[in-house]
Amino acid sequence: MAKSRKLRAKTKVKAKSKLAASKPAAKNAVVNGLPKPSTRPWGEAGKALDGVRILDFTHVQSGPTCTQLLAFMGADVIKVERPGVGDITRGQLRDVKGADSLYFTMLNGNKRSITIDSKHPKGKEILERLIKHCDVLVENFAPGALDRMGLTWDYIHKTNPRMIVASVKGFGPGPYEDCKVYENVAQCAGGAASTTGFRDGPPLVTGAQIGDSGTGLHLALGIVGALYQRMRTGRGQRVLTAMQDGVLNLARVKLRDQQRLKHGPLAEYSQHAEGIPFGKAVPRAGNDSGGGQPGWILKCKGWESDPDAYIYFITQAPVWGAICDLIGKTEWKTDPEYATPAARLPRLRHIFSTIEAWTMTKTKFEVMDICNGVDIPVGPILSMKEIAEEPSLRKTGTVVEVDHPTRGKYLTVGNPIKMSDSITEVKRAPLLGEHTDEILKVLRYRNEEIAEIKASGAITAPDKGARAEAA
Ligand code: CAO
Image 1 (tube, rainbow, N blue to C red):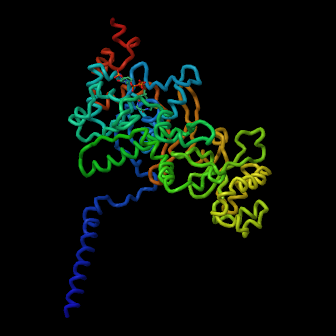
Image 2: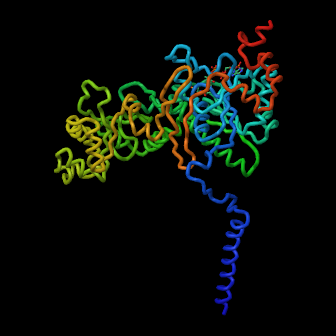
Image 3: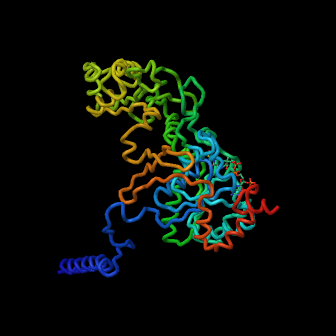
């Protein structure tokens, strides 16, 4: 009796919750706060960040990487640049006379550019309108520069409580917080350089811009998170990514190894097999794999003349038998000195040189094809020339050719994040101040006010502006 009552009660609750879930869907077309799934074709229902407006105060590389990604995802990114000067990278490493450099154009696609002297009273007035108009301010000035412009957090938050203020700095709060930082400083301070290179050589920086672009990526994630949280709280917040922290996050496996050192030598580092004792800190490990599957870079056919005729070869344990078959060492499959990962560790150097004798008879692409055919993980060392010419990267939009009014066609890296319903269209970088008038109109300045602003010198270079003419 008691049991059946319980059962009835349970059934009732079940029926009620079923009703609760279906009612709003039918009536208000909203379930769990979400609208009904769109029936538009994939990729035609707008972009992920449509409607998000970014006041982009970034320059050089770290900040522009962040805002370019947000622009790829559909945000309206308004890049504020100093009149007549612009982002310093426009003129750095110039390859085409009189045209914006690739340094600039490859980091500022899909953005609009407005020139504003942020220290000019009229400029400050325009910025106030922009702060009210936008959702996110992104900056990577030297510490204190934004405050010196009068754009303190208190001022911004008072002017637009919904605004998210996102910054890249070199270091977080602490002894170095006031320092200016560039890519390689971050690679060194974040632990990457001390763990990169060969044991008997100096620390090395890597070509991948993990300090700048890596930190920009972290910041973009922070901004998207803050936008999501704002939907609940209705207020903005500050988002900070320090380049040292970003690099350390990417080098976290090395901090893992630092702690493992207390418990004995790092057996997977080749220096262990070579009988070289470890010091107090994680050493440089050359091309050793950073994970649990040993790997090394091996020469391929043509290495004598081609600096990139190499392949990264991983002796993944589950495919050890296939590796032995390929290189003609079938006996290693059962030989106790080679059959298990632990037995192989002290012999890795010999194992890799034996594999290399085989890889040297093939091109890196032949090795890739043969190994992939039997599930052995390998990676050809691709030069930037090969990457630029690789048809599959063009097809996926990872490498894109865009046209530019002053420099002509150039290659850029498209959005590395592929989304099935938010398709990226890569557009060229803007010319300096190309959208100044357009944006002033969006901010509801009338034509005569725009003329006044121009005459004031707030948006034009001092030597070229109407102010200079009047003087
Ligand atoms: N109108 C008027 N003034 C402007 C302006 C504008 N639109 N845009 C910038 N400025 C001014 C700033 O207000 C600042 O002036 P003050 O120092 O007088 O206040 C000045 O330009 C220079 O800014 P900055 O100090 O940021 O630039 P820098 O070239 O001296 O330093 C960098 C560059 C990258 C070292 C520094 O910005 C920095 O450390 N940023 C944080 C870390 C970072 O992002 N580093 C990676 C850069 S990519 O390799």
